[in-house]
Image (tube, rainbow, N blue to C red; front, side, top):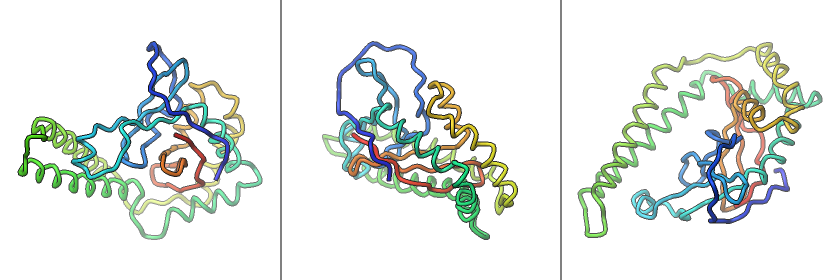
Length: 239
């Protein structure tokens, strides 16, 4: 657990302009599991998960209308975490953690995640279809139909990913060590990198961050290779 990152609740607007959101595409909401979108508020970069009320009801999810996380509240703690886990004195532990996460004869991690996505899509589709069959005056059938189309597309994407993912492929100890060494030099300099460079380094690390506003934590996973995933620590976040 890394302490020190505090978020701010805000709903203010601001002029739109280009900004290299460092966490774009890798930060997810721990309540609804959707990607959190970047936006600018009063000159600062935020990430917001906006969850329409009727969508929350259809999915049986208790979700605030807006969940915010300020970028500069998380990055310092995240950079320290990355640097510490790839520090030279942690090399052996990091290699061992990645090797252990590969498992024995289990399926490739990407395939497991794809199967999980398919199962979750099937559950949502069943709920939406039930909602269509039990329409009342407060239910918008067009909105539900749109959700069904979106979930069907997400399911098709997961199925395509599953078909393309090789099974039972594991890296050797030497391959893992080489991968850790390659990233280690970059990890030590990540705190001083500019936003665009930092985003690129996070992408190479394969970070997936899941923000849990209830306990103000961010779960971090590193997918150094498409065949490898491992959870390192939980990073202190904020709402």
